[in-house]
Amino acid sequence: MNKRAIKILLAKAGMDNQDKEIRILARGLREQGGMDVIYTGLYCSLEEIAATALREAVDLVGLFVHNGSHLDLYPRLHELLVAQNVGHVPVFGGGLIPERHRQELKAQGAVTEIFGPGTSTGSIIAWINQVLTAGEGGEIV
Image (cartoon, rainbow, N blue to C red):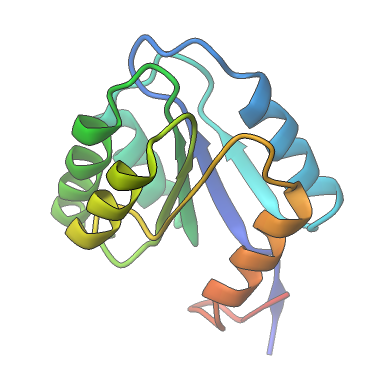
């Protein structure tokens, strides 16, 4: 059985231009977690993010929101992923998102988990490894 690295798409949507946290996470996932990370860069549309998730056949999508639009962005991204037949791909997120909104988004099925400021890269790697199991194309390392 071929072993392959976990493949993660990290994204920022719309006019949200705070990307220091996501760039640090991308580096940590690569260096500490041995993961294959694709970062879309700033100012992507949700449609671009969903299309990239499909094209790159990612195992997870991470959408980080710092502009207060989380209640709109996560559900819409989920709809677009479902429309692209990749609705099974877990979505996680990060940002300054109130706990009640985190629970609401999880209950809607729009996200699997949301990490707040200060969450260690190691904790996120452990969560990713826990969530993912062997997938198509070989055993995930």
